Image 1: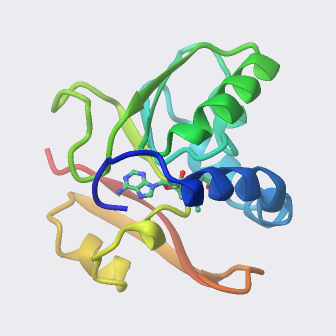
Image 2 (image 1 turned 30 degrees about the horizontal axis):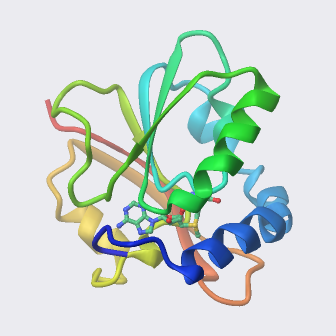
Length: 161
Ligand SMILES: C[S@@+](CC[C@H](N)C(=O)[O-])C[C@H]1O[C@@H](n2cnc3c(N)ncnc32)[C@H](O)[C@@H]1O
């Protein structure tokens, strides 16, 4: 998705399906997510949080979570999950290419399964990351048990100082 517009039936169905279908993927991803997210603290921005599969990793003291999500039908799922976790969330409507967050004000940006939804990316995400000017970049390629978007990368990029 590359622009905000009138909410569509497709978005509503996508939110409904995501809330029901991501359990198997999350079992697989739980091998990686704790290691990636455990040390994050301060202001953490999540791009495209969907129905809140990652919220559980940020429901802890010392983290202020801001979610940037274009699909308004994700809101009720996110709020329900946040309530279940006893967590306050700051959910903002927006897109990855123009985050509604001031520059240089956050400690970490996280995102899972989002770049496959961006309309016009270079699908070689690792190449974009390698040439984006990060100070350091470490990633590995993994094969997810999903019918599509099975080749994935998992990693951490750190801003150059
Ligand atoms: C496949 S879902 C993944 C949701 C969640 N991150 C997860 O791992 O379960 C993709 C999410 O990215 C959002 N999204 C799509 N295009 C986006 C964009 N350009 N900027 C931010 N979020 C976007 C979708 O609305 C959806 O919530």
